[in-house]
Each structure stands twice: as structure tokens, then as C-alpha cells.
Length: 229
Image (cartoon, rainbow, N blue to C red; front, side, top):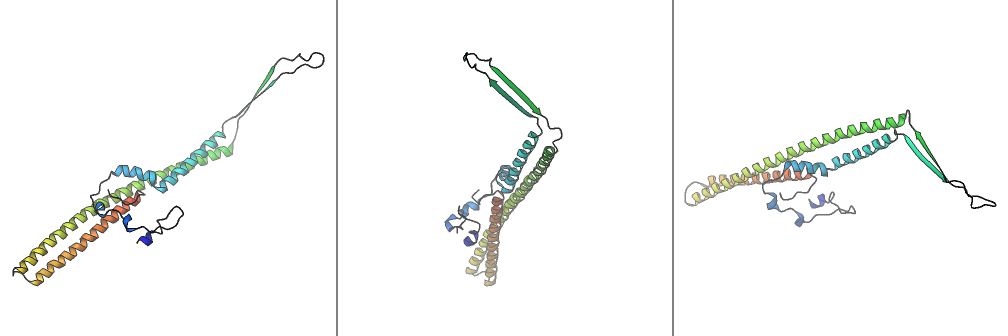
């Protein structure tokens, strides 16, 4: 299992890492009752999920393109200025003309700007589409986490029932063995009780496995590793 996991678990250079057994989560902690704040987990998933972050990046790019296109529709205002003063020549070099300042203002107003308006429309359409995609992804993440959390709670209860059934079957089998040792009952009944214990133990192990699967799926939906609650 560790070798198989190394296909996905890699270092900064992209080389596979085979995880060691001591990196496994604490088994006893994993079997603790599930505790979480579903709403805060949903908000965290919105911030961490790569698919939503990709849509956020595309939305930011579309807003930038919209601002650029709108700027191209604004008037082009240009201000210019020239300062000058001529000094005298010849017999009176100190004579100089008055100090002059020439200022100019030009304004260009785009009358049609079809390309710019087209870019504005395209950017607005992209934003509308991406916002719809973003909302759909958020709703999908919410439903996914709600469903997975329900599965975590259900498998936790199933695990409890399975372990209680195992404990009860073990106690009955022990009483049956004690009764046989004291001369009551028969070996068939002892064997039957021991078979019941084996079945109950198998059910308890499978219930634990399903609970850990549900916990792992919930952690994966949060883009996190499986940790103690």
C-alpha cells in the first residue's frame, strides 16, 4: 500500500516518497467519535479546493480585462506645456524677452469604439459564466461535504452497534463454554456460539473499515490528510 501511495506522494523534485509505517495516524485517535463544524469546513473547502481556486483566478483575470476594455472607452486627454524665454544678442546681451508659457489641451473621444465595446461585452459574459460556475461548484462542494459527513456519522453508529454485538456474542460464548465445563449443554452449542463470535468480529472489523473510509473521504473533500478529530 505504501509503494502504491508513492505514485501520488512525492517530494519537491517530483520523486516518489514511500511513506513509513510510523507516519500512519494514531489508530485509537481515528476511532474517536466524529466531531466537526460542518459550516466552517464548507467555507474552508471553498478556500482550499483547487477547482474553486482555479475559477477564482479566471474570474480575477476577467475583471482585469473588463477594466482594461472600459478604460479604452474613456476620452483620451493629453496636456502639453512649453516654457520659453529668449535672451538678447549683439550690443545688449542682457536684454531678454518676457518669460512665456504655452499650454495645450487635446481631447479625443471615441465615437464608435466597436472593438472596445465588444471586449467589454465579452468580459462581462465571461464574468457571468464564471460566477455561475463558481456558485455551482460551491453548491456541489456543500452537498458533497453534507453527504460525506452524514456517511461519517452513519458508519460511526454502525461501528458502535457492531462492536456491541461482538461484545455480547463474546459474553454469550464465554457463558456457553463455562456451562459446558460444568457439565451442562453440549459441544455443538459451544461451537455455534464461537461461530457467532467470529461473525460478529468480522462485522466489527468491516464496520471499522467503512468508518475509516468515510473519514478519509471527508478529509479528501477538504483537501486535507486524515487526522484525529
